[in-house]
Length: 178
View 1 (tube, one colour):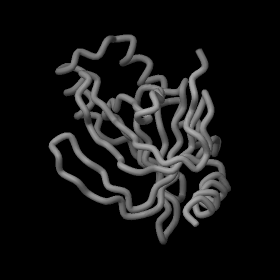
View 2 (cartoon, rainbow, N blue to C red; view 1 turned 180 degrees about the vertical axis):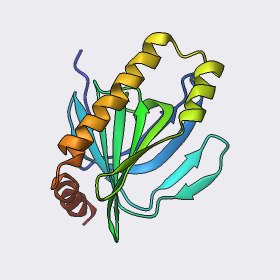
View 3 (cartoon, rainbow, N blue to C red; view 1 turned 135 degrees about the vertical axis):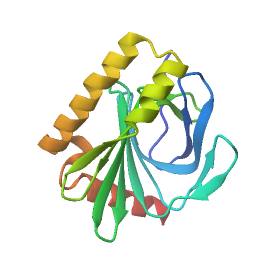
View 4 (cartoon, one colour; view 1 turned 90 degrees about the vertical axis):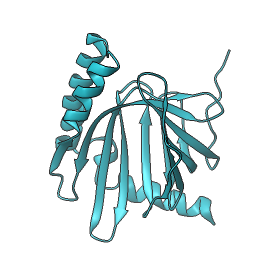
């Protein structure tokens, strides 16, 4: 059986879950820029986000989203007046099931600033949820290894951190929005 990935230009939803299977967050409309078995690159701007408790908010700026089927992180490049900020979620690899792009959010985040300095966020939340939701030790080790891989990508300017990556995909997003 061949899995069909979302086609370029298709609008999809993104569903983020917690390890215990509960919904965490839903992004209502995201445009696929490139969908393959290994990765999906997508974009949104001023999309509605629904939190687990039902509250909603709207994103403030255009964002290019990078999801991988083998890496335990996803990367969001937010285009702001003073440069590109990246928000990186430590997460399960994505799954596409024709309803939405889905992943498990594991709390740890890395925020990268336009000058490529970064800070690791939510380590306390990760530890609390690791205990409460009983993350297996193998998942804990995979996530810690992927924090290091992500930091390596930042230093190497690899993937979405490459100098022209965000601009190139943002141009494609603007093409689909016409």
